[in-house]
Image (cartoon, rainbow, N blue to C red; front, side, top):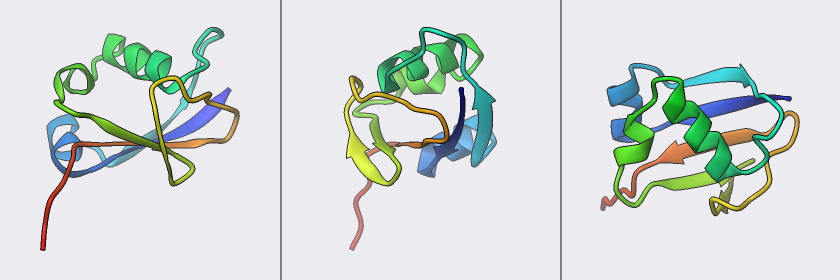
Length: 82
């Protein structure tokens, strides 16, 4: 299954990339499983980010949200601004 991952704010800076397209192995079927898989592939900042937020196809999502072929998954820390 192929998905597009986007990283924003401090995650983008820490990982040195704005995003990537990945082929997921069987068994990676939720946002939480995806995050864990990415951590295992060197994206440790995803594990240590406090209050990590995520969205699937631009809709806010929880770690139990399913991931499907062609989805766009965004990870970002909480942000404030004015």
